[in-house]
Image 1: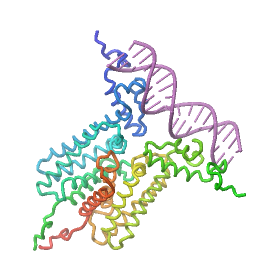
Image 2: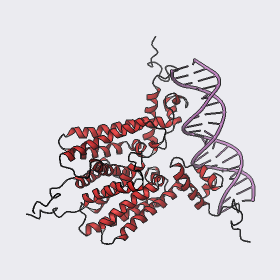
Image 3: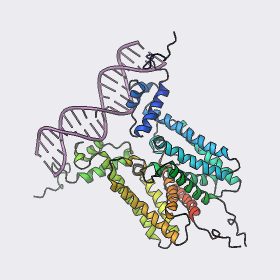
Length: 219
Length: 219
DNA sequence: ACCTGAACACCGTTCAAGT
DNA sequence: ACCTGAACACCGTTCAAGT
């Protein structure tokens, strides 16, 4: 007597069951297929097999549906940075390099999701403050790496926040140059990684403390 | 007998005269007021006092109208970098710093224009290749600065392109972190400039050649 | 040559009504 | 409690018709 969805693929019951998740999944597919400007609520509903008014039981507006996708993106990005941090304990330089490479790699593999997260669409007034927390958690991983590197005497700089800003700007900037406006256009993942390694080396060279910094060792 | 617009402010003739420029100006105002997602062709036409079909005599589509705005933006950005380059001859480091500060300053003063230029909206297939040339011209200024600095033995790096990529990524990344998603939010122009100076110093420290680079002077 | 008005196929959002 | 259908106010684009 169970009303499961095993023999009627279209609509087992009048009620959907888990429309929230279904809509997010459909919107995610549309996002990567049609781009951030091409995803519409109505097309998402058609893909999910419901009327275009149905989402309003689950999301306050279209912005909240997109917000759910962005939130998951920040979580993924943060998890990759976290893995880079935990992957090589006691080697903050390696951690920072790996986190930077992972950042560029994830973003270029999820271009439209990244554009959604950083393109300015997620700065509306009616967004959940929780989104900001998810984003902060991701960037907190970079903070921890650099803070540990400064504690170990490997990285210099005025304070940790300043170093984080520079390092993050560099990696994020390369990402946006690749994604936005086709200014930089690597042929494939290998070339993308080479560019990421290049800028990571440069920024590491900029924040690394050198033996001749306090006083020349020859003096 | 001249049919000028001196005594009838609304519509001197049935023909507009310079609708092209009028539409660009109206769209630019709407862009900074309503944001990149809020500017519509129909609202632009209403502001210009013409029907919403009129633009199609002057632009192939809405994308070409936005393209005109982006093109002017790249020209302005390039001009600021050019002034930075010409402002202090024989001091590439100062040129690069000034260009970076000008870049961040212009972008944060024209946030929606910058989002239009770099947000990925300007990478459609039906765009004029000329747009790409305007963008390249702007970034050519950075190339010249760094190339001169490398010739003078001030900047290191594998080749000029690599150094340009790193420097430009850093400045562009700070810009996009400030504009996109409100992640970094300076209180005003002064704080914005302080952040820009900070990342410029860091990237300069990363690309600058140091006396201990080829061999230790104490050996 | 340039612009208008009506039309078409979209869009996000709302709301009474259905199940 | 959850979803639908119709409606409203938008949107970009096209095209015959006006000046």
